[in-house]
Image (cartoon, chains in turn purple, brown):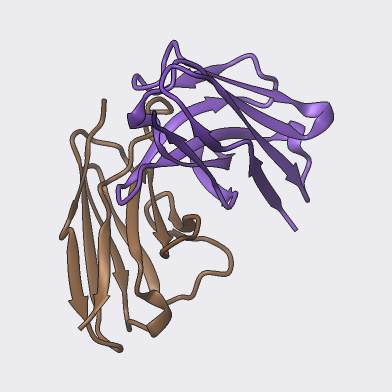
Length: 121
Length: 108
């Protein structure tokens, strides 16, 4: 069974940093691309970042570019999101998602349960 | 960036109703369009990928159609467990991967 479990969320002050983790199981993690998606309270879904299986290609949404860094450790079956210079508008539930690439069609076929990040003084 | 616009933003329907949700892209995206269902407090769930392909395990009352800029998600006979928010998402552009604003399906 595919499982994605996020951790590392919490309450931080503006300007501080936080590192989210996503532990993957039930599939060969090193073969799959991954993404982070967030959802602010009462709002819609926002894609944040993508990383390919070999970690040599990454993409970011403009809203987090230069502040957030996506990475992965295939030996540990883990995905990470380093978040620096956090702002109140970064308050959201953060999801990791398996980014399936099937014949150049990308879609998020599995999602974690999410971890809440609250940025407030 | 490719903008995705869903309509309506919300709708009220009864069990057994046929429900249609529309998603429009700001430019042609061929069939690079996915649909997700999200229930309160839960992670999104993939329903449809590549505009019309039903994800494994998803009931056949869900269907998707469209290409280019206009797409439709149809629920042929609404069931109690289908009351949720639905999002479209384009994958024509790998970055950014934009979502529609969501359509909330409520009980009439």
